Image (tube, rainbow, N blue to C red; front, side):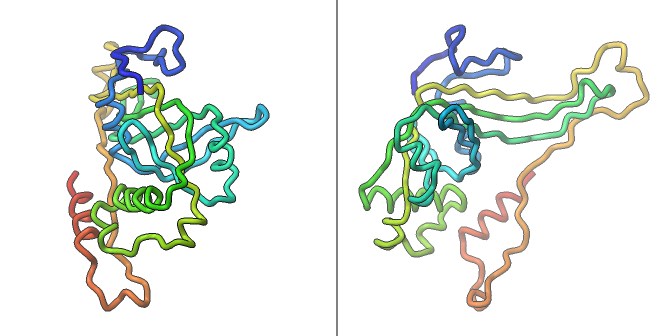
Length: 223
């Protein structure tokens, strides 16, 4: 990822709408990526664009992606085609006094780059553990690692981030001055991820939820 404090005019990762909400530094982009585990990956085949939702895990200035060796996405990315990846989080519903100024508070990142296949079995195994821990921190140590057949059936890509931008909105509604005295409630309804009560499968009913699950639920319960 290029250490650009700002995007050059006309660059593919330049934020052109509401530029004041943009950030181009590593820390801002990494913070958005680290807060989630679901990305939308875009690429084109013979002029036809595709967007695929995928689980991911960040590793340095790269994003790890994995899927079946039969996946068209994975085969296409392995060819080194240009690709883009986006992640977004909604932090609140912004309710204004007019329809026009309703909005959301959010954090987002858009990354551009190319991917390369990771074929080493040890690297694949470590990456799969990283995936598990990216979704449920601490879970990898509580469960079995991938065996030889599972690793052979898995395609792992390291998406190197060449250019990226982050964008965020926070705060209340931006009502027009003429609307501020209208008898209409306005403000922000915060949103956050919530997890329900763990539901064990028939063979797991005899076990209490592990520490990783308990931490996950307790952390998500904090607004």
